[in-house]
Amino acid sequence: MDLLFLLDKSVIAFVAFSITLLIATYSTYAERKIAAFLQDRVGPDRAGPFGIFQPLADAGKFFFKEEIIPNTSDKFLFIIGPGIAMLTALMTSVVIPWGDTLEIAGRQVSLQVSDLNIGVLYVFGVVSLGVYGIMIGGWASNNKFSLLGAIRASSQMISYELSMGLALIALIMMTGTLSVKEIVDQQHGFWHDGWFTWNFFSQPLGFILFIVCAFAECNRTPFDLAECEAELVGGYHTEYSSMKLGFFMFAEYINMFISSAFMASLYFGGYNFPFMDDLGLSQNWITIIGTIVFFMKIFAFIFFFMWIRWTLPRFRYDQLMRLGWQYMIPLALINIFITGTVILLRQP
Amino acid sequence: MKPLSNRSVVVSDKKFTLAEGSYLPAVIKGLGITMSHFFKRPATVKYPEQQREFSEVYRGKHVLKRDENGAERCTACGLCAVSCPAEAITMVSDERKKGEEHLYREEKYAAIYEINMLRCIFCGLCEEACPKQAIFLTKEIAPANYEREDFIYGKDKLVEGVEPMKRIDISKRQDR
Image 1 (tube, each protein chain N blue to C red):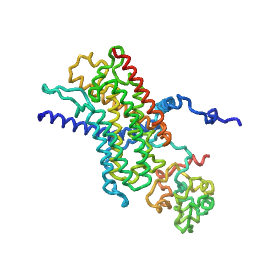
Image 2 (cartoon, one colour; image 1 turned 60 degrees about the vertical axis):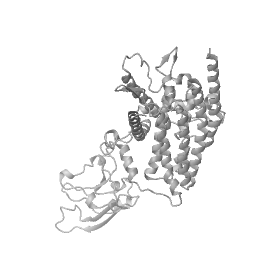
Image 3 (cartoon, one colour; image 1 turned 30 degrees about the vertical axis):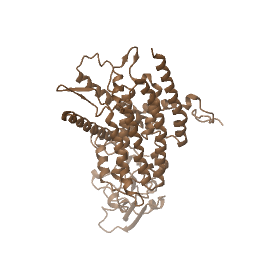
Image 4 (cartoon, helix red, strand yellow; image 1 turned 90 degrees about the vertical axis):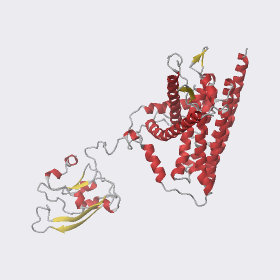
């Protein structure tokens, strides 16, 4: 492994890390603005022009707030909970291909931190670790509401992980690979051989199942039972204050960003865009435009997340479980069956 | 009974059809409704810079009027205090001395006149009760304060200035 390769990768890792944090920060602002627009309001507009410094003000507030640790709590777990939530949220961005390869001084630089050949599996492993942050946080608080929120969060995440995995199996049967980069490369362009190349058009049911599960995994409305203010005060983060609360919230926004990126790469062609081969541009330009297009797709998904949040009310717990186990999993199995049949029929 | 509006829906506990059970049509309809609001003009009034237009006869902070010579009209009869449903007004009367004719219109005047703005409900009954046309409600707002004591407005805050510039126009409330 030569030094330049290491340098490339550290630069990409650092940039991906900073962009993730920046987008998560500004997601809080976007959330408030979009909520306001959907409710005929203006939203935060005092800090800077159009309130664009609001996230900075919020962060400052979080840092200077009094840090309260309940004396009946398990202090070590109480402190480590938000850390785990943040860590697992940030770890998933490793396998996401932010763009195609750039050619710098005769070397091919792939805009991906690491092209694991089990990328999809890796994301699943890390995402299922994410529940530990919430579970530990809720348990260590030693508070009924926190515990109830944590129980809800863990049962919900475990139930929906199943159908999420099953929805993806159909996609993996089709693509024949677990590497995210290869899945994206297979969706090159937009139209090939009389059908769309993007996986959404061959797996529409799988995509709908996946996006519903992504909402549940991110603890977003209509599946935000883990932190429902109306019933559980604040759910698993009732006892948290200061930056530890900020970490939990931040982890939620990072998860939203990462799952948007994941959906964009798996189902909506990642950094591919229509007519990318007909423009006659050099490879570097195509890569740069592709990265911009990829981020536009991500932002569209983040907007969709927020749009849903300010439209739908929360599910009841039994409705959530019934939807997960009685509808989503059978549908995912049917999807696998249909996909398998089509693959079998199309074999020469 | 005949429904008053056309929006009433008959409640039933029928089972969902397959399409309804998938929630998708309702979700899409809801998304359409919220998106239509996305493009509507916000109803917000950006308060400190922009102020909502008040009615000409808005009932805000009180003013104790002076007459054309600059003498206070109030004669401390106490009718406003009696009429006040919130019992917000108190006063202490005093006798006018010689040489104070330019200050007080009548022989008796209010040495202390206090309105508790936390009690006041801005109904305007004091204004109606006043036989001397001395107290009126204005378009001004009684601002927020940090201390309870600061909400008790004395004569220093209520009586209008002597100079023509500082007189407060209450003609709209007189014309009613």
